[in-house]
Length: 106
Image (spheres, rainbow, N blue to C red):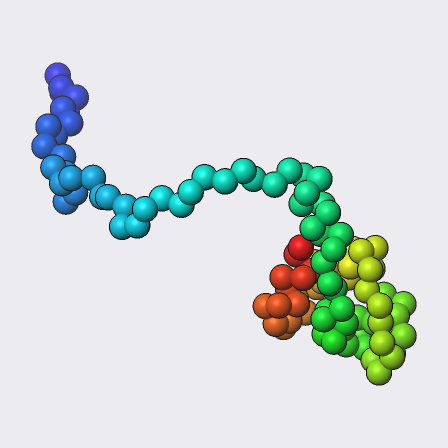
């Protein structure tokens, strides 16, 4: 009869027998995390105006906004519509600078 093979008692890892890694820096101090209400209040105070410079004519037309030279005041409901548009068009989102993508994902 064939006997099942026993596992090798010697670990085959190169890290076997090595001391555990130690942190290089001190741990950050523990602080209280903001509540959901505090985070919501921060989002309500976000300035979305820099995003308007990155709305091309195609985006403005799709969202029913005035043509490119006209200024657009962006409030929270409009940001939600802009976010939905850019989430549906990842190629356009990828073309945005990091600062504009950060505003969309706030």
